[in-house]
Length: 75
Image (cartoon, rainbow, N blue to C red; front, side):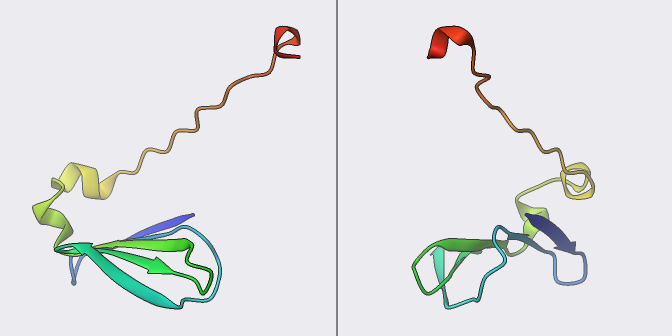
């Protein structure tokens, strides 16, 4: 996944998958989903990002992965 913020256009783009773009859908004003030809979401675009996030949020990205750790009791 790749997240970019374009300060000039005030746009955040989250590229979720490396695949060919097919179409977009604006799900609500300023929030756009990009899809591949199979209908899977490959990207998320947020227009006028500074109206949705403060400057601290735009300059820092935190990424967490929560996974269940398998134990011998899970088998």
